[in-house]
Length: 398
Image 1 (cartoon, helix red, strand yellow):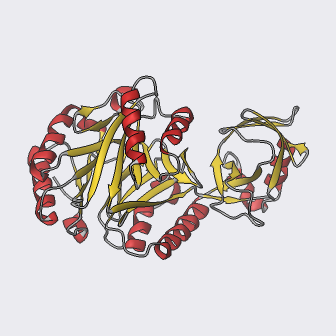
Image 2 (tube, one colour):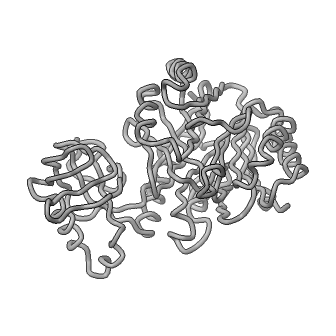
């Protein structure tokens, strides 16, 4: 079974990453676990495993082998349509992406969470852990049950604590989508991992869009329907934004215009990254109404957004540059949750997002996957996103 070209030396004493291609192979999993423990210089604390859905029948063995040979008590992961490693993205391949963490001066906890009433004990434990100095969360969710209502409940419990993650992928069949922890596949909405102690999470969400037209104030809205923007028909304002584009961009813009809802009103100028981007679900030219995948409020600033590969490339580069400047020290590990609609389909070449993370941070151990939805903090709340790249870097220090 081939593995990630000698792991590109993506190794240090705190983290170890390896991308292994091919169907389940007991010897290959054992070897990866042993290599990880050897490179870490001791027992691992936590393993992230993202595997293709054909591993479902062997998942119990996969988990046990990693636990035994990496001496790792905590394991979390989910199914994946494509795998991410250090500077690499593998779409349409079998295999798994592994990240082992050795955190002698930090603590981790895992929780299996449904709706509040279905797992009240786990929610209480999550809230208590969060109040006890949690420095960040990673959430791995089931796309069949994790939606905006669940995210609202999550934010109620964890407040402003940084949260990143994604939704399982790999198949159109419900039975092929799964999240798991060290106890196996969980019949829950999500598995969450909380950190505290000498480790913190610092992430970014690249939404892959650029603003078009002008920022507009929502002057009439009801639930997810926008009636008026700047006291004019919302539908007419969408048409105006479309016609503001150069003619060469208009053909591509069909079906690729979204709405951006400003995360704060305390700005004179709005730029890429200042908005929570959501889809336009439909519109009625006679009534002038737009239906959007959010609940906008009257008085909020909205600007239409154009999704394309150039905007996605530019924004991710800019966000990574800002993140490098922001961090006082180099991260020791990372996770990348990128949309299944990105990759070669969007950029026309392989390894785009993972390659940019490697350009920014070098061969820092990293694992990840192509998701059915991405989770990331924007402003002071965690949101469920689409068409994004949500990356989180682990840094020493609480």
